[in-house]
Each structure stands twice: as structure tokens, then as C-alpha cells.
Image (cartoon, rainbow over all chains, first blue to last red; front, top):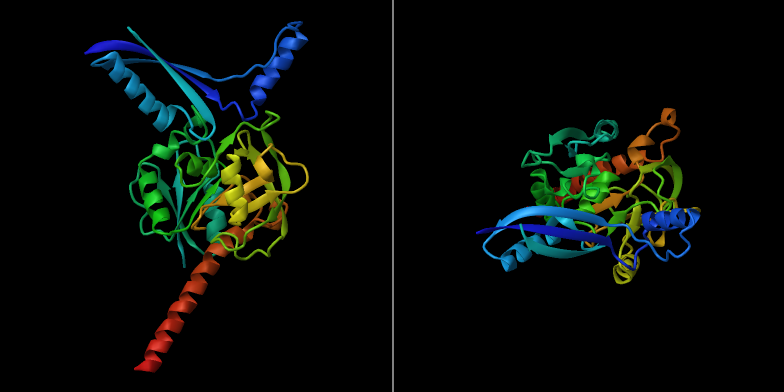
Length: 84
Length: 238
């Protein structure tokens, strides 16, 4: 068994309105950052976990996303695993 | 008298109002704690409004794994009526008992004010005493009230007459098709964002919400009349 650090990125689905992202986008424009295009706001979760392998850690983390960490109707997620 | 279980989660805050509205309508309503594992022979289950688990992660995301939710799902699958109000609606969506999900209001602001809605479906256990197309004034109080569902599921909801309440005029939260409430395919599980329990008596500004609760007891009266009729015909056959 080995320790892994898992980073989960959860984003509102691209096809759905992201009012938080829009508000941040407008605020950046108001501050003079005219180069900013679209902004989207999501969540970043960092988990420490023990698994037999990197593949198992990834599979477990994806299962956590399916069941709890992301809503399959409204959000997409990405999982990145590295040795802790 | 219908037995109505009002589920209390940590962070529920409309549970007492909901219990009072259900009792006022003549039901035998009682609280069930979220860690309980059975609904104590409930005829109807209600998930009230509030901020279960502080809305952490997503509204309703953690509450949907509370032990009582197994009993709620079993009750729903057996055809038992389940009503989710506001946070209760969010929990039912997270639990997969209703389609879609509820996201941050389009204009980001938490909204607490009366809105106008139209009753679109009267063939549910919670709307049978309303007239089709009847217009109501009921309060909303939510930050995550924007109902979203993919276009195919939205078309299914519309075609199946499963939009129960729809916002009239200005859509307060940007919900798909102005949806304020939906039901499942079996029509026994209903979720609504507005708070009917806050509009049950003139002193609260109106009583447009009261019939949600009276409808539960009316269902009982209809069933009871059916049972008596069945008994009567059996008797005449003897």
C-alpha cells in the first residue's frame, strides 16, 4: 500500500450558465484586465488516500466523484493522482 | 387521518412550519430525525426546507446519504407520496428521486420574497385541491433555486405533464422553462422551490399554500371512500 495525493477539479458543466464566473469576469474587466475572456468558477478538492497502486487510487477517486463529489447533472470533474 | 413524517436534518429550518401546516390540514404529522432508519408507518414523507449540512459541497449533497433517505427512497419506490420543499427538493434531486439539479440563482443573490406561480399539474398527491392553471402567490427563500435539466429531460418533463408549478412573469432564479416544481414519472414524488408552508393562513399574508397540505388529507378521504365502496360491493355480492 502507498500514500497518494489526489486532486479533484469540479467544474460547472460547460453548457450551463455560470453566474459566479460571469461576476468574476466582469470584476476583472472593471479592474482593467481587458484581456480576460471567459471565466468559470469551480471547486478544487485535495484528498490524501492509501491505495495499492496509482490505478486503484484513481479508480477510487473517480468513484468518490460519481457518488458524492460531483453532481452528474450539473458538473464535470477531473482527477489527478500523484504519490504523496 | 394521514400519517405524515416530516424529516429533520441538521440544518433544516422549515421543519416546524411544515409540521404545523400539515397538522392544520388535519393530518397526523410528526418529526423523524435524519439518523432514524424508518418512517414509522408514514403514509406521506416530507423533506422540509433549510440548509441541511450547511449546504456544504452542494445543497442537499450530503443530506441525501443520511440513514433516513433509504427509507424515503423505499417509500417512494413503493408509490408512497414524498414532497420536497426547497432544500427538500434539492435533496430529492441529489438522491436521484427527481430528475435535474438546482444551481446558484442566475443573479447570484439569495431571494426571499413572494412570487407568482401557476399550478400546471393537479394530478399529484400535493396539488389535487388546486384548479388546473390556478395562479398562486407563495414565498421563495433560496440561493440555489435555478432548476437545470438537460434539454431531452426537459422535453420529457413537459410532454409528460410533470412540471407541477411554473413561475409567472419574472423568473426569479433563471430556472429551465420557468420551472418551480416537478414530479417523477410515477407522480408520487414532488419537489417545489417555493414554500407553501409559509402561506397557509391570512395572518401570513395569504393562504395559497394551504391546499398543498389539505391535498394530502383529501387523498386519504378519496382512498377511504374507495375502500368503503369496495367493501360495499363485496357485501352486496354475498
